[in-house]
Amino acid sequence: MDLGLSADQLEIQRAVRETCARFGDTYWREVDERLAYPDEFVRAMTEQGWLGMLIPERYGGGGEDQKQRYLPGIARGELRLQAFGVTEPDAGSDTTRISTTAARRGDVYVVNGQKVFTSRVENSDLMLLLARTSPVPERVEDRTQGLSVFLVDLRDARGHFEYQRMDIMFNHHTYQCFFNELEVPAQNLVGDEGRGFRYIIDGWNAERILIASEAIGDGHWFVQRAARYASGRELFGRQVGANQGVQFPIAQAYAQVEAASLVRYQAAALFDAGRPCGAQANMAKLLASQASWAAANACITAHGGYGFAREYDVERKFRETKLFEIAPVSNNLVLAYLGQRVLDMPRSY
Ligand SMILES: Cc1cc2nc3c(=O)[nH]c(=O)nc-3n(C[C@H](O)[C@H](O)[C@H](O)COP(=O)(O)OP(=O)(O)OC[C@H]3O[C@@H](n4cnc5c(N)ncnc54)[C@H](O)[C@@H]3O)c2cc1C
Figure 1 (cartoon, rainbow, N blue to C red):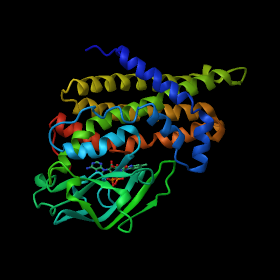
Figure 2 (figure 1 turned 180 degrees about the horizontal axis):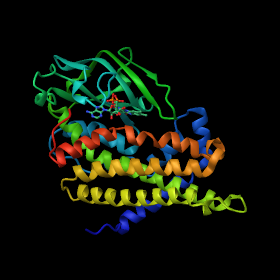
Figure 3 (figure 1 turned 45 degrees about the horizontal axis):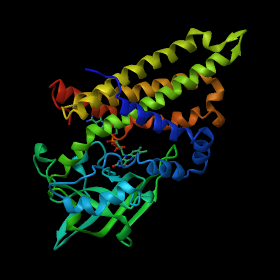
């Protein structure tokens, strides 16, 4: 398999890097201190077309109306669809246990329930919401049935939808959401009623490849910062990076990041070719999140006490990168997928 990037992909990489370079350490440090949303960065990425680039230019088949209504606005950056409500207080890893309900009444569904960790709600016009449209089936193997996905227009939800920002360890805008008799037009049901879990799963591989890529980016950042700092600081008459106790963890993390990157490219190539990629996408997410965390640890250790000083940015990235091991799916669940779905071992859930 050819894992080299095409000319188009290299051009995308160059252009994205160019945009990101306009938002340096000072920008992110300041946004972090204010716990603010990075509006300027998101605007720049939207204006360059990167946030809407996966939206097809032509739409066809089922759901044409829905796509025509929303996708052009999303592609132009006028409508923000950035919120995805799945997780609930009693249903995190076990998605099929969600209890938020959507009951059909005439030409609307009435939503009641609560979500947690729904990111970017305040910066979204639309939310994709997973809700139960029929009771939890008795048989474990049927539990994926009866869930449906809705496109909720948050602009119409006033009075029936409330949210509260969660106080978490880094500047990620995530919220608790409360739905009280919220009416969602039946035409905003995505696909068929009861098949929502299947639609969510369809997006999982792409999401895992995306998260792996984010973690790999962070991993490279940590390795570069660690190597640069360790090469510059002198102690006991030599550069601190000359000590194997400092140098080897950085080199080890670099090897892990590069290995994860290869699996990520393999997963992405399979995905682009429309071939099964569940195993590769899950392995990429697992390995990349572990590599990034190893790199984060090597980096903060190499910096010693300065790793804790905000002006070096390491502590901020350290707090951020831990997330990749936990969300959008925890690594335990990824291992369970590999053990049970790929290696055919007994189920644990
Ligand atoms: C910053 C942030 C942003 C998020 N954004 C969103 C969002 O936008 N939308 C959304 O829907 N969700 C979001 N989430 C939620 C995230 O997807 C969940 O936190 C994640 O799926 C884990 O669920 P949980 O927190 O309920 O942990 P739990 O499911 O309670 O798991 C707790 C621990 O037990 C382990 N565990 C559970 N079951 C098993 C098992 N069978 N075998 C082995 N180990 C197991 C898990 O690995 C985990 O370590 C976000 C979370 C965070 C922290």
